Image (cartoon, rainbow over all chains, first blue to last red; front, side, top):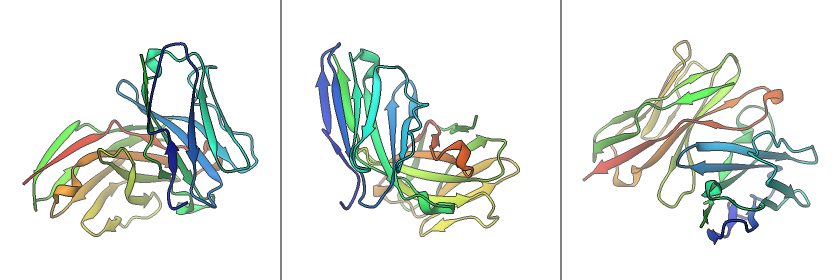
Length: 116
Length: 117
């Protein structure tokens, strides 16, 4: 696609429910990133996928958070048993991989998650 | 761990004037990249300008330029001839140049820029 696409744009859920957020990266980008943007914590890294390598999950805040990337393209971020503190904007980015500035990250418009 | 600090939560500028947004960072690495991203109300982060740490020359992109002071670990953004469309949240970001450190971006807290007509 022309840019990084995220869906849904907005999601309202009840505390304790599971949610899935989707990211469709730019075609040909082998690297994919998830970030969370919240009022209290600012912008923080969650997880990074690169090709067939094991993902870097070091930013996931708890075991309620998981992500997968199927076929090296679309990624889904799943939050189980949502809590009110999970309310945030979840941003996805993709990039090429290579030295120097080849791996500029391009962002989607994010999913605003509200947990009631 | 690297940190990025933006000490100006809000800034305002008159249309057609010049404004400078501040950013400082802390790192022990010698190979890294610095970025300024703009986030309008649409939420989509847009890359404004980037700088490789090994380059002494300051990056410029049309009305946007940076003042990169490596020794002081400072990376400020200057916007010349400000336009109404420049109004947005601006984030300074750091990325390591070492593969072992990963490709994640570390962001500052952001500066909300208002452009007054």
